[in-house]
Image (cartoon, rainbow, N blue to C red; front, side, top):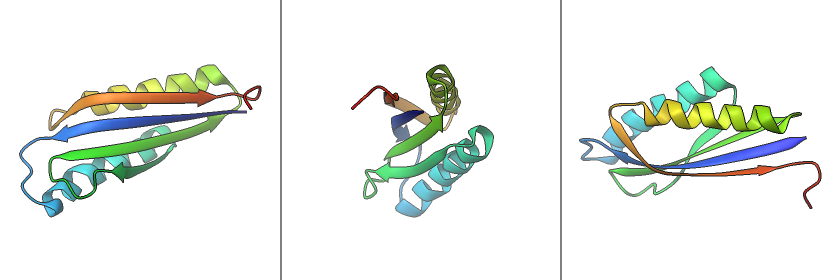
Length: 98
């Protein structure tokens, strides 16, 4: 079993309130969840208007599949015109890790 996580730090476009922030972040979270069948949530920088941290997690029997899914999630977020992906940090843990 392999477990992968992806932490995406994003800068939001013209956002001036937390309500506007939610209207940008929620569709991203929903799309990732539906399109890639992953666990995903806004996981940080909750009190800042123009920044968000989105966390993604995936579990699979094959490490290559975990990496492919995380790559696809990262690309999907990076391609969105309304945000800028500042950084992406990933971790993959396999059955041999302790």
